[in-house]
Image (cartoon, rainbow, N blue to C red; front, side, top):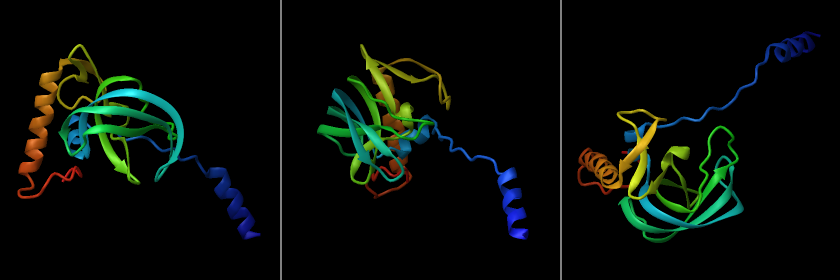
Length: 169
């Protein structure tokens, strides 16, 4: 009888637990990405690829124009549109600065949609000042590349004689 009452009590006071996405600030996003690259996405298609925590429902193919951190060149395959409803990486054709990490041996976005920065006419939709996480503004591509390079250089300086593993350390 005590178990039944306890069960009813627990069910009555139980509240749902919802996951929330964490969005890294600009500097942390740069530090944690394994690869940061300027990529021309040429093909977007539906797929079902199981990751560690959710399924990816989008596969994109692109060409790496320039790698700003880590090691990526030539053709690249990236997965997005996670089944995690709070935040996703949704890709489309075009030119972007992409922040990427490896999951189960394949590339996925790092820092959700914030790790997909569109480039149009050499202007990047980039963070508006400091560690603002959500307001973006058009910024010259060269300035964004320089800013990313400075953070990567600072990160490497903090770990002398250690190759950049892209793990944020």
